[in-house]
Image (cartoon, rainbow, N blue to C red):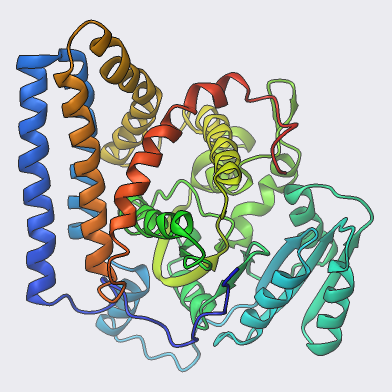
Length: 458
């Protein structure tokens, strides 16, 4: 597995540099071409072929089109935004915001990568931090490696758990037993490495007192392993640069992923115990820890714990880069997708009762429409590709597939625009679009088996 640590030189990204005229033109053409062609498809389906597929395509078109437009026009890396505001307001304080950051990394049976992530943290450009490593009941030499790291570096705390508690409770132990003393608490998964400036960039975003959490930008560390990892790398980039960007415009990022997420201490401490011991449908629910914790920050604290708690903004920082190991085998990827879908359902039931409150109405509408789209996507796919062809109608299925591939082309173009030096890797985003169609069929299975976690990883 090719997982060499990336160069510490931070690569420029599309919104962290000034966009050239060619880049602006390319972005405009992506939006214009996408809107025109998908709009034509929707009109054809709605009025000539199949109204049900047409309505679904209308919803899909709206969500995709709006996502690209808002992320292109409205998103700016919050790091740049605050830097410009500070300059505009002529803030002349000689002491910059330099809070203590408590970095908590739980790990089970991961001795190689726990050493790699520790090294990348120690190379960080941000120096005011403490690192808390939690050995979550490992049965190999992970604990020994952690002890060796503690002897090598001064600001590391080690917590050895006698038995495996799972990620939520391991994180809780790291915060309380460490103890985590920082104003900012930062989580990184053990199978990741971070860019040298990632922590510093996340911390600067918290200069806005209304921000309770910040998500970094994820890419695949092992993207060169095989075609499957290349596909995931292109998908990761688009999910962050488009989907999290549009949420960030409204300060309502719904998931700060465990691969790199920073939280203001006062935003998560009220919910720590309930989050670590989450109950759903009468039993403990351990999946979706990152999405669930973010949900407390964007309103769950106030809705479920008490009116004295505030609703925080949650942002996405494009320039804080983390690289994570992605599945190299199809079976592992399928299990991961099922895990994520189960957690998505659980958190939807958690956030749906309050998400419309204290929220931009447009952002709330997008959230609920996205949920609706996910529920109906497998049904429409079955109708278009199985039911209607059995009735002798093949054209709707063809149009459905063409639309699917065209959406993939939009994201592929976006990937190439953001990553001009990646050769033909953009093609793998099209392959992922086909896989995404298959993964959508797992929605109902995940929902019906949401209480069954026996064959999934923790």
